[in-house]
Each structure stands twice: as structure tokens, then as C-alpha cells.
Image 1 (cartoon, rainbow, N blue to C red):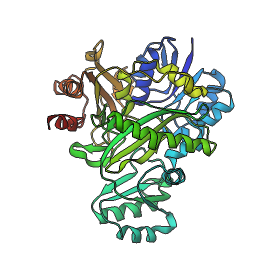
Image 2: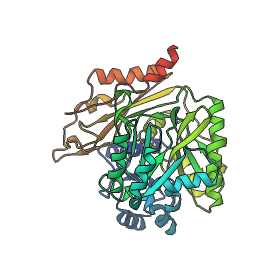
Image 3: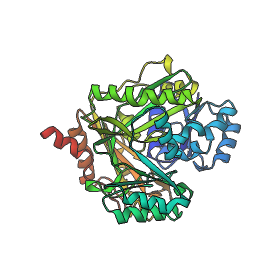
Image 4: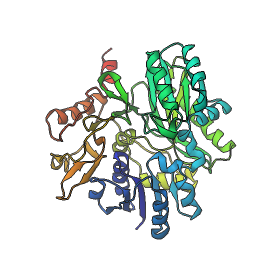
Length: 437
């Protein structure tokens, strides 16, 4: 029996674990640290090792020698976890620190795109000592304003606003270290791109020289309905977007994904993991909003229920540098819609420890998946909230409208809940409106 170590404790890792548990090889799964849902999977256990505790993860892997390590979050990748594991001849799905710069440093990613002709927004970058210059540059720009912290900020280091005063305050607070600490040592002031956003996650293997796009998904980053409020780690996602025609997918492959692969190989970067391209489909074609170096959350939760191929085979081939040897993944017909159930106050301060009710209602359901994210067990063995994003409720159906109706029907019936629970009510609504006109 193969032993798989999955790093992370969110909804993405629960979804990956579910898919891996259904592999023909029936592997044994260990989650570090996991959550209340991952421990319920067949042949699975949690280990109380934080996803950012790279030294402890390396030591655990040295002793236990897993057959494959799947790294969910970006922080351990940026810290070089994959490099340390590969140095011990342990197979790992995820890029080393050099490749993880695609996400860990937005300024480096912009320079990478410039070197390799990958279309993106125009940008000016400023260091902490250049706050006055940054503010002067901001005053010359037309709104809306796009301001980004350079480093990792858990999906919250971006401000898009039409208010120049708010943009200037964000620049000042970021460069002072008050908002994001070291992640704000630089800020990027970008051109505002007009268009439709889409997430394209791709398996990337620079060893054999292949990059394979997974099914596209659209996520919702703002906290509230109507894309209002602050950025979050993601409040929901659906797949596939109706605007992603075969022609658009081919253009993304040719203009974005293949040049990214070629650029990584040209720079000698060993990249065996996910290239996540957050894209804006503009009037002049697809342009990169930003890269991530790992599978998306909440996109993964909406993709896993649609995956017909064996995920273990796909991850093993990528980690071994033989992605070119296997067939592209197969997908089930239909669509999926996923809604994040969040704690009140998220992405700001929120309470933990609220008891979850209704979990038993999801046992044995078809076409409905409840992925745990911020959950744990209390001393009495009850499932309680332990994070800002607590669950991902995902439904599938023959089309977006059916899947959307299923997920919101469950929420409307109150089948699951906890004190302070909130969610967006407009996930995938634009697809329904598009279909009507």
C-alpha cells in the first residue's frame, strides 16, 4: 500500500484526499495537519504538524519515507519544502523555491513574464524606501487603481479601488509593514485590466517538457455579494465557465501556458507541480493577472467532483517528471458550483469554536460534496469551527443552473449551520444571466 503525505488543512486538501482515496491503488493518507473532515476519510490519519513548519515536515518525511508528498499551500513551497524532500529522494508534487517565486514574489513574476513575452498588465514596482515615489506615480495613473503587496498575503494583499485616497493609504500602510509585514516590502501599482476573470490550473513538468491545463474555473475573491467588500482567500467557484470556448482555451494554451513552461525550462527551473494562472480575458486576448504555484482553493474543490481520471496517477507522473507519458485527465460531463461557508467577520477577526450542526445530513448524498476547511474536534468530540473559511459545499449537475440550484437549495433548507455562518448568494449567478440573454 502506498503512503501519501498531504500538507495542509483546508478544503483543498480534503478534496485532494477524497480524490486520492478513490484511486485504484487505495493509498494510506496522512494529513499534516488536516481537519475534522480529513480524519474521516478511509485509510487516513491526521498528524499535528503545521503546514508552515517546514523543519518538522522534513523530519517527519525523513522518518516515515512517504511514497509521495502533495503540498497544498504556497508558504511551505516558497520556503523550499519540495527542495528538501527531493534532496532526500522523496517524490513531491510541488515546485521548489525557485519555481515558487511565481507566487512568492509578484515583482519577480512580472519580470519573468516580461522576459518571456507573456501578456500581463503594465506595472511599476516600489520598495519600502520609495514610498514617496510610489505615491507620486499613483497620482499620475487613471483609476481604477490596482495595488498589490509583492509577497505572500493569503490572498488578501490586493486592493482594487476607484478611490485614489484609499489606494494611497493602502500603499503607505503596505510599505510601512503595517498591513502585511515583510510581504509588503515592495508594492506593485498595476494597470487596471478590463475583462472577465478565469482560473486555469495546469499540471507542469519541466523535466519531460509538458504542461496540461485542467478544466477552467471561476472563483469569487470578494467577501460579499456583487463583488463587494475586501478580498478573501475565495468565497466560491464554479466550473466550467460558459465563456471558455475551445478557441479561448487554445489561445490560453498557446499564449500563456506554453510560454510559461518554455520560460521555466529556459531559466533552468525544475518545476513539477501546478502552475495556476489567474487570467483576465480582455478585448486583446488573455492576460495574466497573477500566478500561483499550487492548486487553487476553492477551485480545486469544484474540480475534484468532475474529475474522472485517477488523481494519484496524475500527481505521481508530474512529480516523477514523466507527465508526457500519460494521457490528459478525463472529466465528467456537466458542471459544478461550490460555495464557501465562512465564519462571521471573515476575512477580518472571527470567532472559533462554534459547534457545527447537520453534518450527518451529508452522509451518502449523490452529487453533493461537503469539504471541511476550518474545522476541528473539541474535547467532547464535536466538530467545531477553527478557521475563517469553514466548509466548501459543492454540487454537480448536468449544467451550471442545476448545480447552482442544488447547492443553494441545501443552504436555504438550513441543512448545515453554525453560529455566525455566512456565505455569498451569487456564486455562478452571472452564468445564469448570460444564458438568459
